[in-house]
Picture 1: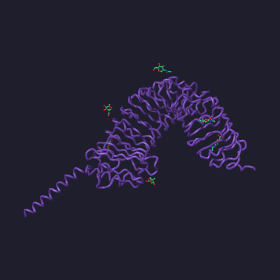
Picture 2: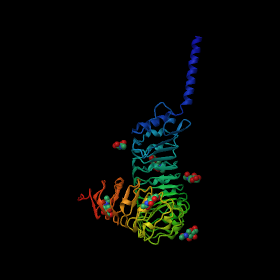
Picture 3: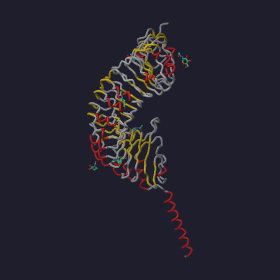
Picture 4: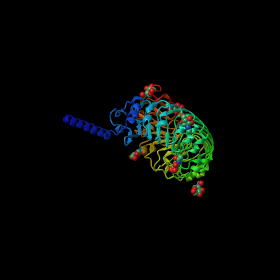
Length: 477
Ligand SMILES: *[C@@H]1O[C@H](CO)[C@@H](O)[C@H](O)[C@H]1NC(C)=O
Ligand SMILES: *[C@@H]1O[C@H](CO)[C@@H](O)[C@H](O)[C@H]1NC(C)=O
Ligand SMILES: *[C@@H]1O[C@H](CO)[C@@H](O)[C@H](O)[C@H]1NC(C)=O
Ligand SMILES: *[C@@H]1O[C@H](CO)[C@@H](O)[C@H](O)[C@H]1NC(C)=O
Ligand SMILES: *[C@@H]1O[C@H](CO)[C@@H](O)[C@H](O)[C@H]1NC(C)=O
Ligand SMILES: *[C@@H]1O[C@H](CO)[C@@H](O)[C@H](O)[C@H]1NC(C)=O
């Protein structure tokens, strides 16, 4: 009897120790494990094995993408890699994630194939602060109840397929520093109530179907650094209150809308501005002289507007990308502040009234050049020197100029994909080296001789003196 008691005691203490051990070693709370396994069972394709470490009975705090504090899951972060075709998840976001009562961050980014409606489970997560559900295929309308997510500091639903209007209740999310709804199919006006979101540093609504005028409410956002409204259908002028953003705004993107009027002088006061995109609108008049003061501008795109001379002589230390194409400029020469930039990678000056010899252009640094577009100007001379010095060029467009050189002497670097020399005075033969390009156009020049084997269509070679061979007529022997 005594012996039995003793063995019982041993057994009990053994069980007690086991339990103690279990409590110490299993850091993951059962609700969190169940919630995450529920999420996993809603996924019907995971070809890259993103969730392969998510196994029942193992510590969910050690699973890929999970962080814990104590035994509770605090964040779920799954990222697809855009350069890997297999790196995606298909399926819907399971409501069982609402068991993660201590989660403060949900990051489901670039998973490409997550579908279903706006995830209502977000309403059941009392600690939630950060939501980034980006580049997936969520669809349907954003619910009016979105205004209940008042704890949120950041909300991004960018790159999905949401439709309908932006609910006006979004104005209750006053804790937001980031609101990103770009690249969806949202339509309607920008709700005026967004002015309540006074702590915004990042507002992006680009690539939707929003229309109406851009609300004149920007004095409400003293901390705004990034504003992206491009690729919508906004009309009217740049609102005057944007002037209030001068101290901090670094990034202003209003391109591809239907905005009109003059570019306001006050933009020249934007001390921190590094990127300005006003392309493809109906802006007219001159570029304000105050632009001389944009000393930090790196990326400037004013292409496809109705802007006229004179273009201000900029004071910028180094421009990285510049596009002034298709306005009514007559620049005559490539501006000095462009030629002197040692960091420039993209220069687009199509139809800018440039009349010069390419041989007279001596850029300070050509190492970073990826794209050069000089189409529709009156540029003469040879392109051989320029293409000899741009080692990593990807695209060179110069159609509709007076370039005159022997095509076989042109160096075609390995990186080059696009070459358009159509409607110039180029002579000689088409060298075999062009066959590695993705796109070629040498039509309407003075080329002659047999074509090398390429995949380019007839229209890439038409209008020359005596080119022959496929896709043109066979050569006469
Ligand atoms: C993405 O999901 C859709 C619908 O769920 C499915 O038809 C499609 O095959 C999936 N795509 C991939 C690449 O798995
Ligand atoms: C919060 O949600 C409830 C129920 O869905 C809804 O009636 C209410 O209008 C919402 N509040 C806000 C501010 O969106
Ligand atoms: C806005 O930011 C300030 C300063 O960081 C903070 O004190 C305030 O609580 C924030 N407002 C909201 C509504 O979160
Ligand atoms: C540039 O800014 C200075 C002071 O910040 C101002 O005096 C000057 O007029 C501005 N230049 C132009 C061309 O607007
Ligand atoms: C091309 O560059 C090389 C080396 O920089 C130089 O030796 C050569 O003369 C150049 N050729 C032409 C046609 O400019
Ligand atoms: C080549 O350029 C000509 C004239 O600029 C144009 O008509 C033709 O469509 C172009 N072809 C290709 C393949 O780009």
